[in-house]
Image 1 (tube, rainbow, N blue to C red):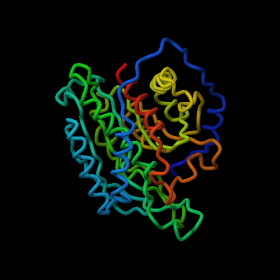
Image 2 (spheres, rainbow, N blue to C red):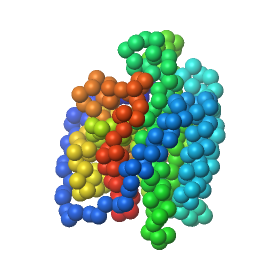
Image 3 (cartoon, rainbow, N blue to C red):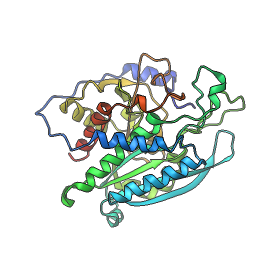
Length: 329
């Protein structure tokens, strides 16, 4: 199953039968503090390491950088290591970065008190959407597809660290590894199932006993495009409609309705799918969707041109302020 749209007939029929009603416009709300410049710099720092392909030196160096930044913001950070079979059935090493902000000891209460914020931090080893076949075997820089969501989460962590202790939301930030290790388009062997989002699959299986302590989750993926548009993704609406509407309503009140479209999109295979289906945590996906492109994503998706030219501070600002404001309501 590719990281793209799942054109299942039954789902498409269900989707076409759904309607998306505008949320009522109440009084304006105050936007949370968020620096798009800081988020942009965190993305640029990741990109400077090169393509963060699992097993590479850039991947190792970036992991150290991300852990240090999160610790700087007061988080308790650990690297969750494990392995799952890749698209060829070989063991793939996984390094998830888990950062807890807030009272870690309160996890034992068993109540839904925490919010899960997540993104993937790895890069795709193959630019398999390149028109030039030879270029398809080169890694993707992943400025938008990976680094953008991580950069916004780092800035959210920084802003939380600056809040008075009594106002800080209880947040776990999880950066998933090996999200983009799914079957490449040039593979001619028998395709295995569930080859995408290995890090979230591992995390969801290992944290089943803790799942009941989460209120909900928000996944950020490919949120930095200059022309970013975020639709109400089908899987998100299936498992967490209340959270989707909460976030989209917040965005509208903040003046970001041009980014957060009040329309449904097709289902997307992303980390939130496994958080919902394995861990049972209602999780939504804020992900750029372009209905005018054949694959639904930006024209540079999984190509060598996924670089800093495709990161806009305005898009980072819209997502960062919306998420940070929504989780404090």
